[in-house]
Image (tube, rainbow, N blue to C red):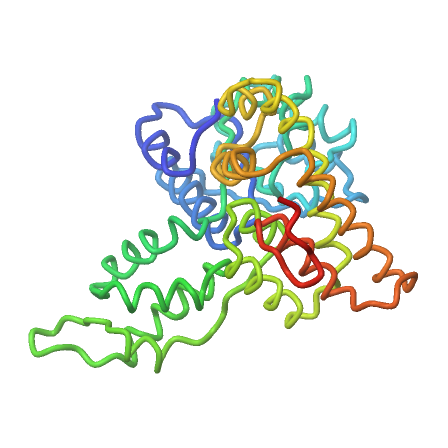
Length: 350
């Protein structure tokens, strides 16, 4: 059974018997931690008093998991086993071990699997579909920028802090991509912000500027999505942030090229008269990226994509020392072109 993260608590509360396996997948540490804590709390209420943790890497021996899942306490205590995956690419022994646990149908044992985000190719495999059909699977997505203000507002209100729009925007700018830091900043605000006469905390822009540190973290995929949306300012800001963090331009360029190659056949279908929604559906674009990809499909042509690929070739050569140019500057030109901008080195091709 596949669930959204916000459905997990309600589903567990309404469950008469513990599910045999819950799989949490995602790359956002705070949301993963909170979901796992929710499961652990449920297990405590279900009187699962034993708990065992396995950190699963390439050298992990699955026989130890099978022995633990097959040897419950002589005193009849219920048990939670946690499997913390370093990778979702399980070997055959791991796949068989998880299926063997499900085949036991033991109501006194629950397995909590937590690991990285799972790609579409893995979700569509026969072994994973078999496990998903008998368990609870939750893919946990990061909070994107469009939803971050609402998420922060809810967290602030939970701590009895009200914030005006300007203060919220400052928080968004300074904690984007780093929800753990966001919660730390909220805790700091509780300690340092001065309450009003009624005892409540009200956060304005001036207080936010003084107290909230810049903890934003960006990824190459955030830069790509900003460019797809045509948000030139944000795309450049993300590139600047990535460069300041010491990230090399090559992996970012690789993400851009991969996106360009993925867009090209979809744009050709658009130019042949197919509808954009149908193209996105057929392309199996993740729901959290549909807006960005849809925006790019409406705005770009095949010629635009080939132009960006040519610019990407120059950026790649610059990064390899084959072109007398700055790799970051060339990467910035690629991203600007994808976002729809024209620069001095990019003549208007209209």
